[in-house]
Each structure stands twice: as C-alpha cells, then as structure tokens.
Length: 318
Image 1 (cartoon, rainbow, N blue to C red):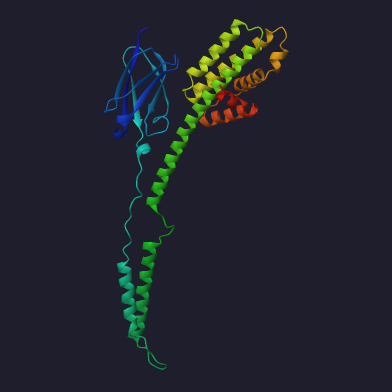
Image 2 (image 1 turned 180 degrees about the vertical axis):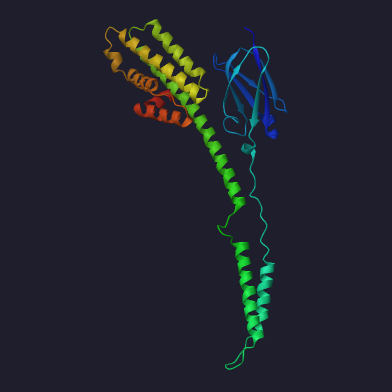
C-alpha cells in the first residue's frame, strides 16, 4: 500500500508560529510524529500509512492544545491538506480601553452664569416691588441651571451607567478562563487515564499471580486490553471512551475465564485484587462511554468511589 502525506498550514496569530509543535498520532498503530513548522506556518509530514490520525497543536505558553484535537483521515497519493487556525485570543491581554473624561467646563460655565444673572435680584426688603425684569432674570437663571444639571447627569451618570471598556475586558477574561478550564480539564482527564490504566494493569498482574492455573488466552486478552488503553491514552474523549469500554469488557471476560480455570476458585475470588479488578471492569464495561471531558472525569470519580480510593493508591504503589 502506498504511503500518504499531510500538508499542514497554520494560520491566524502569526507571532505564535515560531514556537508551535505539531503531533501527528496514528489511531491504528499509536505511532507519533512530532514536527516543527516553518515560520510561515507550513509543514509537510511524509511517509505515513493511510488511515485515521489525530493532530495536536502545542505551544509552550498555552496549556494543552492550541486547537481542539483534530481527527483526520489520510489518503494515498496527493498530500492531504490541513489548515489549522491559531486563535489570537489565547495570546492576547488587552489593556482596559481608555475612555475620554467628560468635559464639564460648559456645565460649570452655565451654572456660574445662572448664579451671576440672578445675583442682582437679591437683597429685597419687605414691600419692595419685584419688577418684571427681575422676575424674568430669576426664571431665566433657573432655566439655565436646570439645563446645566440635566447635561451634568447625561455626562457623568448616564442611565444604566454603562462601562463598555470594562465589559470588553471582562468578556475577554471570561473567555480566557473558559478556555483554560477546558484545556485543564482535558489534561486532567489524560492524567487520570494514565493512572487508571497503570492501576488496573497492576491489579490484573497480581490477580494472575494469585491464580494456580492461568490459561494462555487470559494472558493474551489482558495484554491486548492494556495495550489498547495505552495506545489510545491521547485520543479525544469519544474515541477513548469506545476503546476503554472494549478493553474493560475484554478484561472482565478474562477474569471470568481465569476464575473458571481454577479447581477451587475460592481463594482467588476472595482476594482484594480480584474483587477490585471485577469492580472496575464491570463499571467501565457496563457504563455508557462518556462523550465530554466532564463526563469522563465524573466517571473516574465514580469508579474510584466504588474502590474506596484504593485504585488510585495502586497506581502509585511500586
């Protein structure tokens, strides 16, 4: 079968291209290629077998992938072209936008003029006449003062008192926090995948060590299942969920075969390793595969709770 190639072009935020690293991972074999693109964002990856691949875009200043994990299919012959945009907002820290201070000089001048206009009408004594021009001066001064006050409320205390420059900054910060949360969640899920795989591998090994009779088929099923989990530990949640469900169903079947092969399975059935393996394998094989990172993390918490925390302990125990 002829090999294929990926022609990759990074677009978007140009300054980020210089430190970007691309990882091309085969879903079939688990083979990983690491490539550094040119400064213009272009990269060519040749000599790959046709099939399904995952493409990760990494940068030292960002947690996790810059671009959501891409699942693409590579065909024979002409290079398969990929365009991956680098989101500028991940590298942006925009200062709060400056807004012009309101010019209150006209308001001040209007208030002073109104004061001066009515000043001459004061000092009246009881019985003094109020001439029409005095009355008109007072009314005119009050009118000018009222207009100045209305203008003042428009300039310094608009209805709702919006601060668009702060709203823009808050939106940017919220977006950065959401992206960080998503990326952190994906990395946390991958760490938990590794820990659970390591723990179940050790549990199964010790379970097999306690058995008197170990059929070769049991060893093969267990080895293939653990290898499947390890090869897909970097897959997206949907792919990982399907592979994990299949792997644990095979482990569950292998444990049943191991138990049936014993002349007296009592000692094996009563061992803590065997019970924990059955608990985890049953939970993972019977529960619907998660389709989101949050669902995946929640599932790990449920499994860990069913073993009273012993599963994570087994991951770290030498």
